Length: 178
Image (cartoon, rainbow, N blue to C red):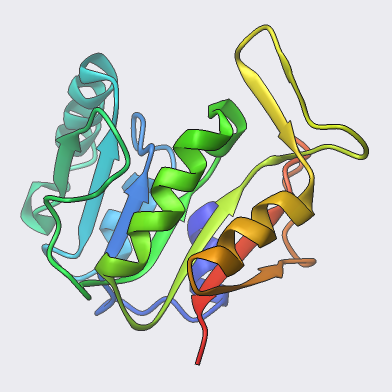
């Protein structure tokens, strides 16, 4: 579903994709298969889940696609080259992040985005006050996230054609202001 959505919105095999919170490659396996060799990068905070992702690469015979998987402890993205990625994607990541982590990502992602690149992410939407459930699920007003985007030079667009049948998470797309 995630990879189909990106392809329908212009993802090309030649694009370089960074998946933040790649997990065990639920979407990544499809992206890796679609993209040119060496064009998929996935990061996650869990060493265990990245070991599982490596097994998915083997099981799906995706080794020749040369996917890059990296463990991270933050979202400063400092080890990636500047202006490199055409698409940055984070599905069901910010739903589990305090606002400081989201801001850290938004503050730094622009540096690694190529001209014309997009950054798509999902979140849990709060109708009123922002809140969290069990220190695990975080709910934000769309205005809070679009405000952060504007603070760091992005235009934010709510993707009205995104519909997740399993979890009610809206999607925002950030692009650099022209």
